[in-house]
Image (cartoon, rainbow, N blue to C red; front, side, top):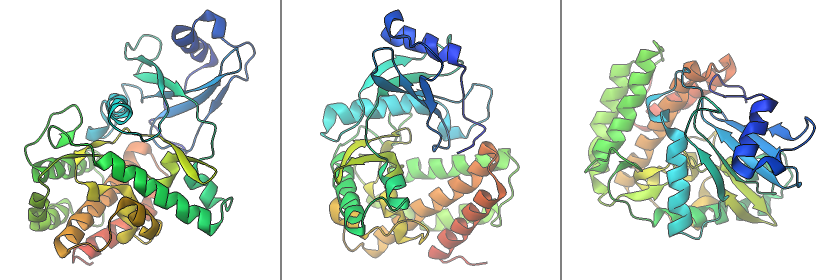
Length: 328
C-alpha cells in the first residue's frame, strides 16, 4: 500500500544495514536480495536475503521530516518495547529481534531487523480464498486465544507502554481521542462531523470508561493481517507498534461488533473468552470503534491516501457515530 510515511532505502543502504547487523561476511552479492513487503500503511518493510541464504525482515520508521500523527511519534520504539514484553511475559509466538539501531546515522530514522517467519499472512490468505471457511474460523479462534493471553499481562499504568502514564483509563483513552482530533485540526481536515460534535459524543459516554480498573496489555492493532498462519495455527503475531496498557475490549478482533465492514467477530470472541457484553461494556466498545473510525479518517491527509480509501473511512465514521446515537 502506498503511503507518504514509507521510508524506502537504496540497495547500498540496505547492504550497509546488513553489514552492521550481521557482519561483512553476510552482505549479499547481486541486486536481488531485497523485496519490499508493501501491504502495510505506515513503515517501510523489507525481506532481506543474507549471503548464507537465511532471511530477515527490516522495519524502518518514517523519515523525521514527514508529518505523522501524535501517537505515531516514536512508534517503532513502542513496538520494540511491546515485543520485549510479549517475549518475556507470555508464550505468544512472535519474530525474534535480531538488531536495533536508533542512531540515525545509516538511515534517518529508527529501524530494527527481526526473524523472517516463513508462513502466509492469515488475513491475506483468507481474503484470497486460499483457506476454507472452517480453517478461517479456526484461525480466528486461535487468534482470540492468543490475544486473551496477551491481555492477561498487567501493566503499571494506563496509556503508552513507556509512558507518560495515566492514573485512570478514562484519562488515557480520552487523551488518545483528543490527540487524534487535534491531529485532524492541525491538518485542516474537514470531516462530515464537526470536531465539537465528535468531542461531545465522546464526553457524553466517557463515564463508562471508569469501569476499567486494571491496566492490561492490549495490542489494539491485532488484525488477521497482522498474524502469520501455518497448518491452521497462528505461528507469529506481527506489528505491535500501537500496543498500550488499557482495556481488553479495545482489541481489534471485536471491531466487527460495530462495523459490518470488518470480519464477523464471533469466532474471535470464542477464543478471546468474551460472550455477551453488558450495556456499559457495549458502550465502551462503541467508544473504541469511534476512536478507530476517527483515526482512519484523520490518517487520510497524513498518508496522502486515495479518494476511495478516504470515502470508505468516512462511511465507517458515520456507522460509529450512529452506534452512539448520533445520525446525520
